[in-house]
Length: 264
Ligand SMILES: Nc1ncnc2c1ncn2[C@@H]1O[C@H](COP(=O)(O)OP(=O)(O)OP(=O)(O)O)[C@@H](O)[C@H]1O
Ligand SMILES: [Mg+2]
Image (cartoon, rainbow, N blue to C red; front, side, top):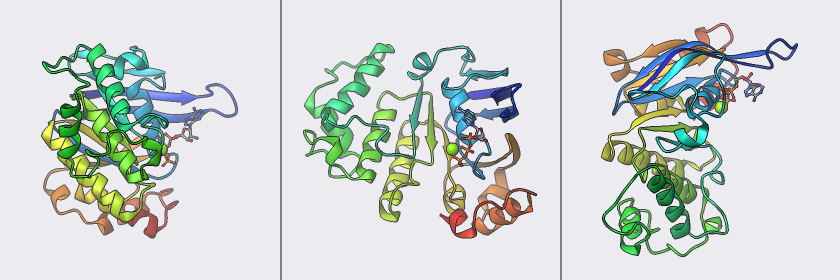
């Protein structure tokens, strides 16, 4: 369970460049819940992820993950419990290292956090199984340099790495935005599969209203550092991209994205 209680983040406070990126954000995400976050450029979505993962410091408020208050935990300590995937496929994996070596790094990272397995983590068969389950055809390319893989394949490996040791929370920041439609579809399918298989708590930022309607249990709309509205329950089940676009445009300053961008 992730809980934010009145979290605010201000950049360059007290200067002419002051930006109130998050304003009193309160949010509760239950175990196994999948939440999508939408909002125009600069709304504060990535800052929300930064403050949850420890890359940004809050001016006020508290962040809790399960029973722990993690507000002042350093980023590396939180990284054992929080998996994060970025928009750029190059950020999640190390070029110059093979798929096997990248997976080994993720496994070692988890082991440092107390993650234990009976079998040796680096054992070939275990990585093979992890990849075979994803049906991406990467299980026979364990010795390939990840730099040789396509963006979609690298995002898939990043997702497998981010979920390898079952984090408490998975943060996805527009992780399919740089991919072609086919690769994006594959990575979305893999995202759903991994979230369900591991009963993960997932928060996914997207500019695609279609994805926001297709995925998850709840949609959150951010605007100017605030949560403007949430859609859950029955209303969420029947939600169409056009409904979200209407609500988006009804915000005074929510028109920065074109309909084509919103439909992703
Ligand atoms: N490190 C920083 N220093 C100063 N200002 C920042 C910093 N990071 C973010 N901001 C500002 O905070 C605001 C929110 O930025 P953020 O990146 O969270 O938006 P976003 O919703 O993720 O936008 P996008 O859809 O473009 O990714 C913006 O005005 C941005 O310029
Ligand atoms: Mg962002």
